[in-house]
Image (cartoon, rainbow, N blue to C red):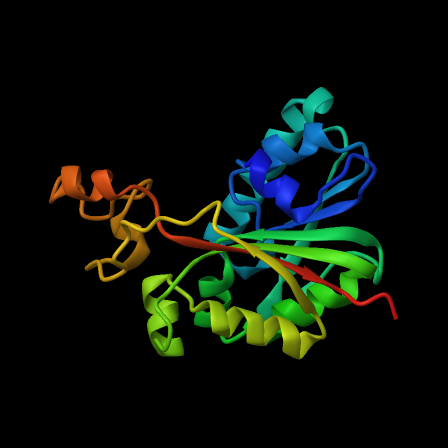
Length: 219
């Protein structure tokens, strides 16, 4: 993760927005590495029990260790309702890890990138990691399998106003054939098929991922 954050250009004095932090795996890495504020754009708790439970678990986690999470400020991100509760042009970086397929399923992927653009200061960075599909797959397939084509992601970002600054292969996995029966969740860490072909899927490892750095223009 440190190599990924370094590629995104995350510096200690930045204010950073982490999108959909889940259980906080990346939060544990980012929070102690910056002196600025880490905004955690978590689920909208009004969207149902699952979202509320996840939101509340994360809140309990950051409240349990003020020393580690003292700079973490919880907020709400809900692309389907066009909600991102941070001030416009208030953060230096927006980071999102393996979330694009979820927005595709709710037809809100364009909303998400527009919200990120508004939240970033001019010159700010959008750092994105996503399970990578083979070129030419359908949008419907992206939502179902979790694998999204790099071309589609770049198109969404450019439409919102971003410029693609750089891409990296630090999260790539050439062993991933991307044709698994339960999509990306067939592979570790989820291993959706349980013991069925477990050794084979474990030997592949985690999914092949794109790592992209976008920039909001200064003007």
